[in-house]
Length: 426
Image (tube, rainbow, N blue to C red; front, side, top):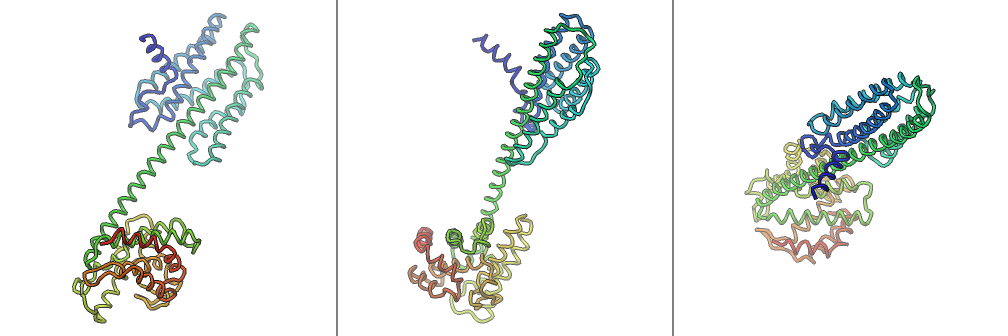
């Protein structure tokens, strides 16, 4: 058992990633430190083999060169494996070491420098391309692979190999084969782990951002609904009015989309904003005095004008109190719903008496949902009307108070609307 643990620990040292990659303070560096660790270890093993080979052949200059390389890579491994925050100097040292290594190779082996050395920074640059998408990923990996193969191929086969040191033919051939294989493996493993780590990190970041955005949206929506419930309670209704009208709007929006009505306007974003805006349609009622809002009898002209102004005041409240919300499209729809949800298709509504397609679609949808609930629900000053009679009124107002297309869609989901009304009855 102890021997097995020892083997696992030994293997983990060579193929495991630095332990501190799981530390939240350094998690962002895992995409580079893990692959770098593997790269250093491969180079350490490779140059240790070279050192032994050149020692057996008693070539002093090459022994010095590879001894320096072994010390350098061993330092990198220890630095990266055990010291927090070492990823940045290790990255810089790696880039520098790659160039210094090639300079030494040119000096020692007589290799002619060429454009192939530009492949090294090109491979590093590919790592930092952050755009997503299948095509971008494919291009990134293709450039990385082509650069690596080009570098190795040109260095090995298209340089004048004229070393000033005489080596046995078998040693020369062995070096050539080992260098080709290990260079390709080192490059492939390093590049692969870099991309795998970075792609994983990007995926985790995308999920985290999406979750936070969804959480913020839920909090925002809950605040809007709570605010609307407080306002609606002033005229004797309960919070279920907000719930019902919101569900009517949602059901109607989905039905219009299913039918393909107003598809150019009713995009996914517009539909979502219309549903989210529904609870705010009567937000302007907060400016209407209780003596008018709760009056059971007929309103005077002056009182009715005060009621009419709740639409204009609602738009102003949304402009003033929600100006910090970054979603401008939502604000535009919310203001339109608050301002125009009492306008009529035939122009007999308020506050401006506009008609037809001059009324925003979101307001035309809100109008029919609001009127249906006002008739079907009970209030302190009136009884609830039977739902069948309410649908008859909705049908009779088609092309008058309501948009004909929206009316047809609404009447087409009578069972769904009825279920919403009954499950959320006061």
